[in-house]
Image 1: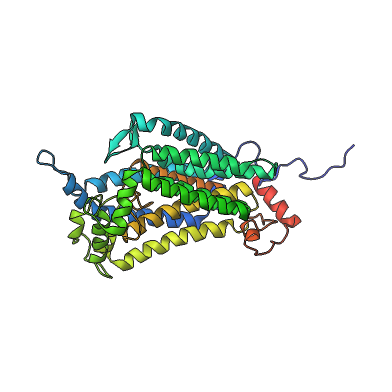
Image 2 (image 1 turned 120 degrees about the vertical axis):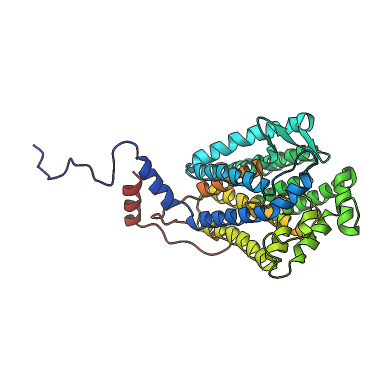
Length: 419
């Protein structure tokens, strides 16, 4: 006979049997995600909608013909629709577990890498480059490959935790080199540089030996030099940047448009120079912001991008999972690097690259790709708020010391909530 214990067979209220309800999953998702980062993303998307509304008349006027006249807010209305789809993608991906987010990124990356092989042959040619492909909609496979590449590269570099003798550096270098070559066949030098930059940041965080770092930098210099002599498009853009020219002077026009509004701007809808600016709603939307809303607004945009990157790094400062640490760093480098390049082009500090401003520029598939990457970032950096890490992760690499060990009470609270 077992002694009678009141309530012994009763299941605790905080440990529901079976699968969690949808509402419970949403509450856990809301507790685990970086809400500050999500708020910054939504703010940037709102500012981007306002910027596209300001740039839409210029692009609509340039694309209108005697037969077809586009509505001045044509791109603004389309941008609202794409933003809604992109936001749904962002939230849906962010609700995935870390493992499912990794699997989705790897599958997407494999598919986009396969498409890169056929883009030079069946791709749609625009402005002398074959970067787009038509599969129900027109999109750039490289746009979706970028976030998948960051996650896939993190997965490969994290193999060293299982076996330190695995040649993860050689595998990652070969994969990056393959993507670089495929992009140059389009040609797409700007995206190739961005992929190489992501890879370099991630291998540095992964702990590449100093001796090998010199070889990596030397190889990068050789590759850029070869690109200058082998690709006319890249050579013309670089020559135009350093020596000036007429065939590729949109960077100079963008810089003049950016500075035309002064500190406070000419006012919404009152910009004049934007009407002659090519790609005002995409590549050079930062210049439209400068003319109509002023340099102060441009500075706010830059600070918001910095805030997003810093927020991700703060989130990773005590991350103890190497894959999450590398993937988060790579995705943050992707977001910050693309914004950094676009802004430098508009400031006439970098050759034209045909790269959009993340979360700000108009775009269909590119907007979805950016939000997909941010959704992966939020999913991978999800964290149990009741669990205190036993290591400092990125903080260890920066010499910030160790975190306090997790005590028994924290383990019990975490178990009760998530069982």
